[in-house]
Image (cartoon, rainbow, N blue to C red; front, side, top):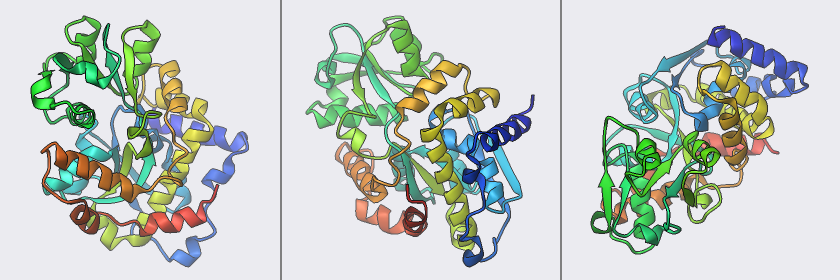
Amino acid sequence: MTIMQTRRRFLTTLSLAGTAGLVRAPRALGAEGALETTTVRLPKIAAICIAPTYVVEGLLRAEGFTDIRYVDLPNPTAPIKAVARGEIDFGLNYSINYVAAIDAGEPITLLAGIHVGCYELFGGEGIRTIADLKGKSVGVQALGSTGNLLVTMMAAHVGLDPAKDIHWVTDPSIKPIELFVQGKIDAFLGFPPEPQDLRARRIGNVIVNSAVDPPWSQYFCCMVGGNPEYVRNHPVATKRALRAILKATDLCASDPARVARQLVDGGFAQRYEYALEALREIPYDRWREYDAEDTVRFYTLRLRDVGFIKSSPQKIIADNTDWRFLNELKRELKA
């Protein structure tokens, strides 16, 4: 069965289940004016936490888009450069990655927060807190990777010197989770479905769960970034695309079982039980409550404090964010 067929079946099932209101065209469409383009391009990568991307197609069609393209990308961080280069129009990615990319000069416009934490820091025997990582080994895919950035901030937050107190282990030929399972490293940061897999196998213990442990649980984990030229030239299309993405986010919160099945059927996740567990644990229902600008400010300050970036929060917020669509949609899409 093709991905397109599974999506069509998914939307039909939604309608039969009495949730057709999610895909009904909004009343505000006429007042917003005509779409400047009926084309929208999104990333196609295997990452459970950006599930709204994979259940949004019918919602985009309800907004008037007729040419919806999914662009194959090699890894979870690739959408950021693809957005900046205009290869895709919108992408969901980690807030911290967006901030680092913007500081490096990538042209990106941040539009909204999607959900709170999905990552978890796991430690081996005898490691119960971040402070216990002093003198220990932490596996990351590469220096400068998402895991490296996040654990560095966590370590600095509790007074450790990440450069001196932690032994960073990188091995491009093997994933950090495998090194952890083999006992070759003391800790690593996992992203869905890795935490679900480790818990199922009773391996290690959770030091930090970003969905519930402050301060990480108080800021968006993933955000929507748009290509600045698309956002500037197609404001109506941008608002409608964002509305569809936010509705898809609501769907992840209200019906995780059906979304998990869609992810597996579409080839975006391998194991249904892990996808379902992740969707149930990730707080997809916070986009109305949390402040996206606060998230940008928080991560910019933390990254600057540890020397990863030089930009100020004021500069990034002024030059690389546009919250007007989000503010309008918060009023329209009330719970």
